[in-house]
Length: 444
Image (cartoon, rainbow, N blue to C red; front, side, top):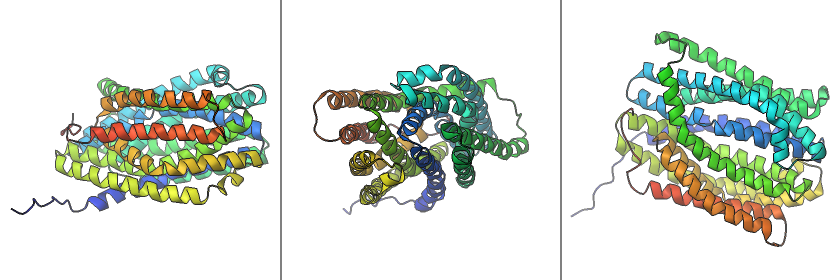
């Protein structure tokens, strides 16, 4: 008897590329301009760079905890869209944007009041603490806009529109970089100029997204005010995602806490390597964004076989993409640090950290893709629980790095521990997709 013929699905590659390529551009736009900001601030001095590093870690943690505004909105909108229910898809996006605005106002107010305590809890002292507090307080004014951008981006991606977020992100972050350069050096505002430029750019982006979504809501004859039931559904959908994100941020915070105990140069070096990590993570996350949109759409349409084929294809792409990114990073590891600091000690330590990071990229590619697949499938409870398991693996490893008398640069060992964390994430995610239990069809 001949072996069973493998089922083929024409158009998979085109579907993936139609969302992944613009998502890649949009995702890379932000960290590229964060790199520019880091370079601008880095040449002001080590204290300024360390202060912005701590402040941005707190800010990104707050925004990161709210990432469910995009990651829950995208699959919810995509499922309704795949099922042919466009008005319900738009209503889900509208409610997500209102929830984002509400949470953004609350978090912004809390951040303004709590900036000194947050920065101090991270271990900042002296001039580093002053710069971190200054950066945080100004940045919190842009918190509502940042969260609205997340929810609106998730809405458009759920509608299978990846190009509009690319254009908005590219233009917005170009304005951000220009403003930061002018405000930091032209106006002499130092760290405050970097934060202010980002705030202005984020509010401009939020206004553009609102202007784009309003006509769609009117054409669908939907009310502009949110639905209480829709707000509750959006909040519920994000609950497990927040737990999952908390586990990720806990890993980042614990790493920063270990680095802070080793002094200013390791702190500045860690900020540099972390910025590169964020850049590469956003690049690898392009396939995850495509996975969220496409998996949600196909499961909403009831096509589990096509969803399974999409998953297998994107897993292969994630590993290959990670190999390419790792080779490129390793090739330029000695050159990159010179663009972000004038301190030879930072150059040496950052080179070691970047080489360790390069080795991890194939695993990172797989992790980001599978993360997107399970988010698109709505399997957020498993992601949350798996995140706690991953922390249970990572924290003892990091404790060993912090307490043991290890030779060489501490940055290299810290990023080696980060590699163990990525391996744990890869193991828990691949275990989940070994069968079809994660796939549930329909609009629920």
